[in-house]
Image 1 (cartoon, helix red, strand yellow):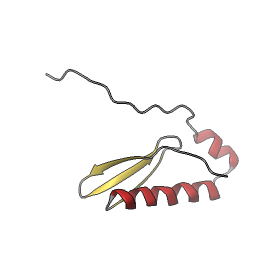
Image 2 (tube, rainbow, N blue to C red):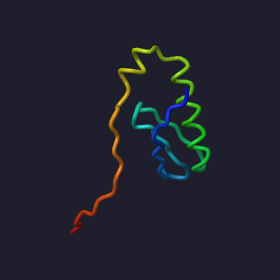
Image 3 (tube, rainbow, N blue to C red):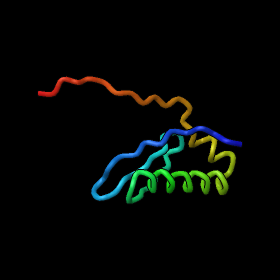
Length: 73
């Protein structure tokens, strides 16, 4: 079974941090692609080892990612 999840990747220092908000799982890498690949592996490991109860309890069903304009100064 395949599940489509969100990956948020941001620059941090000399590398990148990747985060899946649906399950609060994060990883990192030296490049965007490496951070994404490492997050993918972390999610697969989570689904292989977590109990169905843990998977259900960690799931955040409605995730909205948007941009907005905010006055600064």
